[in-house]
Length: 465
Image 1 (tube, one colour):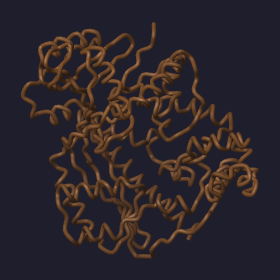
Image 2: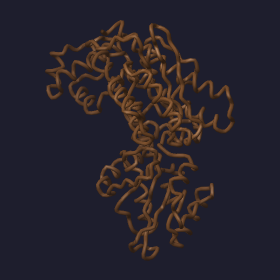
Image 3: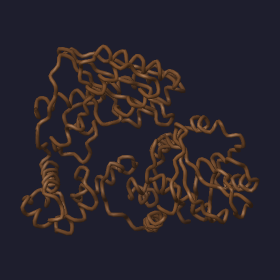
Image 4: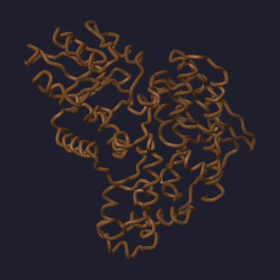
């Protein structure tokens, strides 16, 4: 039986083509938590989806769990010309699509003086390539079913904003991608190329292991496929070979790559091969009596930021502060408490790792308001350690996440299964059971995150200033 291709197949392919291969060809089948499946695909829980579409008047829902029966229900609703079809299923041969919504628009089709376009509900506030691939897939199925291909694809964000794109502008790339997916399903194993997207795959350990055995160049941090292809063309095929090359040799072999980029890749190869970090520069850290380390926990399935955590370090004394919201209705109170906390630390640097904290601060400020004092303090004092690390330190790591770097520097999280994705599952379970131990685990995880940020900052202060 030919393996089914769904919209999630395209997401998996973009993240890691070997994800598609192992799903089909591995003897061992790996079933993931349904919430985790939805989490990795930027999906939202049903209750959040219902909230987003609550203003629809003519809406019907496909309720059958069996895909074939769900498709029959979808066809029935389409034939009746219902305006909005929720949880629709589209099937043609081995293609199975699950657009969150089908929306009726004016035009001619097999159905009459109307046809349907597909809409997905996503937590992201901008269009991503994997969304467009999925939209092209829905459009292909709709053309086969109703006799006309939609001109546009759509997503609706958790803020109810409608984002659209032209199908034809992405069709060429979609067709090529579909062809590659079909080759993989037929048995062609993709070339290994480790990316951050591979981490989301249940087969990451296998992919990473094979790449390490091959001493693959994709193990370099943030390396582009084009760069690897250029090095391979120049006869540099492994991390080991790259680590032994002089910059002069590399400039001769790959003159179209910049000297600075060649040097960074070579130094990364040395760091990985010799399992040591390399300092490339210094970081400028302010010296103050009080420092704050900041991290946010979110539930993307509900588009809900529920915990703002801060570690205050004053004269080497450490205190952890948590600002928690059990429901979205409590977000404003949580934010107001955090703003008051910031007003008590107007002159303290606020260290964080990555841009997520900045994005949430801007979003909350716009949504709930903020005092001028707190706004100016946050704008002036927030310091992204990742931004400081990248030009200054090369770690012997393929990924520069906080967990990867802090673990390399000797920091340990208390929970053995600590991860951002698992923290979402813990929170979802807490919402159902209200187990105090589970909430304590979440708080400890956030505290460990801010302490890991502090651990990194101390290491930078001692080694790179």
